[in-house]
Length: 521
Image 1 (cartoon, rainbow, N blue to C red):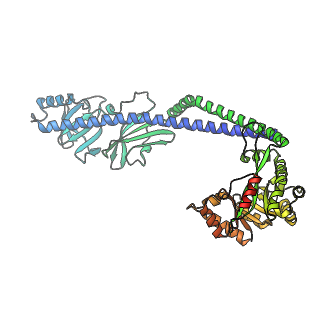
Image 2 (cartoon, rainbow, N blue to C red):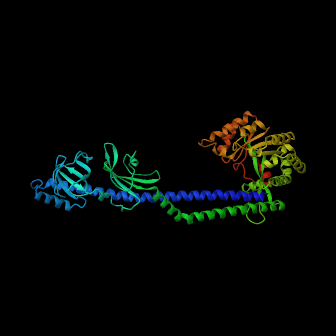
Image 3 (cartoon, rainbow, N blue to C red):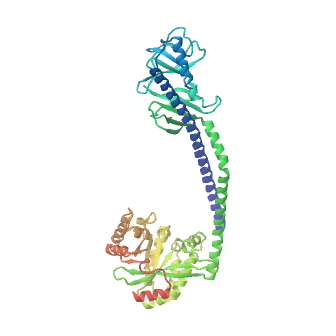
């Protein structure tokens, strides 16, 4: 049954691990796809910004040349030739025109049949020094549309697409030159499919975000007036994701394989540890170490807690933190308790002979405390050891009190026989206060985690004092675990804690060492 339970649990664990790996794989691939898309779009946006900046530099250079040189008669052939020469030297400027206010009188691009009113400028640039129009059409040039920038009486004609033609016509990406107007940021010119709503909420600066499944990158020119929006549609982003999935598939497969191998190894170890634990119980490979318990008021050793250890016949020793859970899981914990009692039986008489009031604390598991035969097992132990029930302290954890009615009746019977009872690891479970109200107890053991924090500024430092207050209000004696410093000892003693154990007083030791320790203290 336990073998089948282990296999089922391992199968469920494997399924959970594989699911987590798949989720992590997909998430990593999606992150890589978005990162790759952002890099591509940022490169495009920066190229458009470079072209836009170069265009502006050339336009301003043209205007400065026109201001510096003596003009031929306005719109004369000599004047137009002069304008054509300037435009030819500026790669982004297609032509130059002469304005009368906002009316185009002539242009180097073509001979106008009549003056052309440009209307109200689309935008004002450089603090209003440059007026800008978008999509200006010259009837003399079929299909020709231009962006026009003007300063004073001169206008520079720019082909709109020469800034945004970084994309081939069939590219799935989209690029747009955007500018700040009276009503916020708007598209000036673009290539590809763009939704003007994507600019909603844009306040300038550099951004990268995903909207409606499409990846967007905004790059600010830094002048507060122009920026670039580059977009990658959902389908293209998903294509990058699938490509990233393919690239990272070997790593995901390797992670899954390693995880399954680790789980299989753990399953084998659990199954082998169970078998080895059974053999160890048959072969009596266990021994005890005793940790002294001292009275904080006098420093006198009043007893010890019995701690089981496993020295394997072959291989290194295994600590209780590893084998006790296995024993509980495979219904071997009662045999472990029997082994503890047998070893205590062999050791206890010498301690009690030296100090008749001394006690030995024995830990009982949930399986022990919830079956009536524990009382007869304790009785056999003290009869064989020749000690009294008052020399035995029974320690139970909150986890051991999982069947309140049964456990309460058993604890009442144990206490009525003269044994003293302590609740161990108090405060680390979920039902501590209800347990204290339900069960008749003698001692409350303060867990090491609270003792560690008692002399610190940690928020949990006050919990130890609350526990001490609860114990006092219920008339319980207290044993603090894991005391390692003199300051901890002094704080606990001053707070009213009667007993303590920990490395400050002595590490777990053999019974002969405990006898020497007790004589010295």
